[in-house]
Length: 292
Image 1 (cartoon, rainbow, N blue to C red):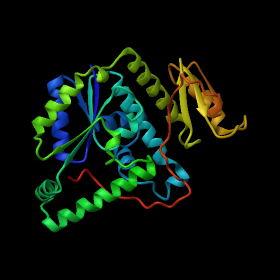
Image 2 (cartoon, one colour):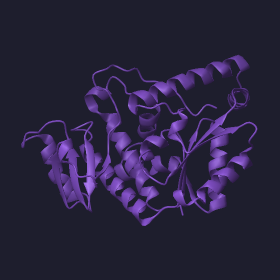
Image 3 (cartoon, rainbow, N blue to C red):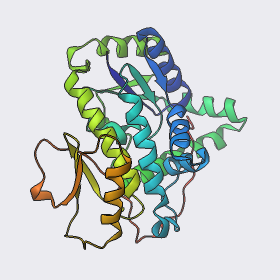
Image 4 (cartoon, rainbow, N blue to C red):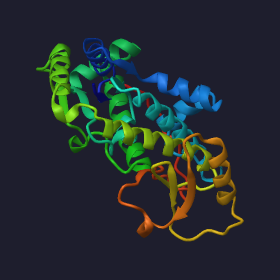
């Protein structure tokens, strides 16, 4: 039993490795399914959710907080998938959603530049020069996007338990390595881990009710009691307080909710935080897909 995330520095190889690993282990393999679930659960067009994890914050986000809401929906859907255990999740931004969850096997798949160029040339029918230009542009934009929203560079190897370079290693070598690592005790799910994921999923669901009125709020939970971490006290008549009452009524599993500052949080609280979106800056929307 286990949970594996595969960050794809190489789209085609990363997807193939994720699918083969899941089949061999008998796990569910999910990627786009998370967007579909979030779209259905929260009645949001899938294209809006896709743009939320592919585009940097736009000028309008500073007024609507749309990106915070959509990312909260995606995170809630993903954590609900992970509660089922025995999952391989692959795709961009997966590390932000699970980076603090213990015992999750975090894998990064990368491909040599020459092979990435050949792959892009074949898939998009472009010249070698154009393929190289696209790859460099995408890599640069991807780093900027992750750093602005989440505060990390997805190519940083310290974020992963293993980085596999598909060059000397084949796809099958990578699958074998991941499956062998998944057998290690430190990557087996436990009841404690499932409880953490369940708490995170509940916190993420609470956050979907609050993201548009209090962007940046950190939601923490312990034994069904929710604490909202804020920098300063809030007025009793604020919109956030009104939403808190709505949360208690509409979110199953929430026993109570309160606002607290950081020094009053309990050590046992499990917390889920917002992306690091700066609403005061006009950041132009960036474009990328899983090139290479």
